[in-house]
Length: 76
Figure (cartoon, rainbow, N blue to C red):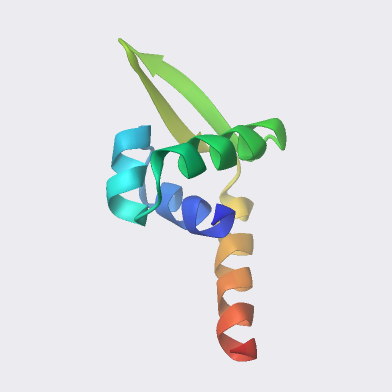
């Protein structure tokens, strides 16, 4: 799920509602995974009014996410 979030954020920064809609994950799951990604310094946040916008901290995180996704496809 975290890889999926990284890939969704690779397109452009998003708020939680956009991530839920685009990634097809439950709100509680998205929030928990974003917290872990933020602690790992892979994701940063910006406050825009009442919204919190999440963005990738490193372009390499997107490359790693794509690599992990391709490896998963090869295994399955």
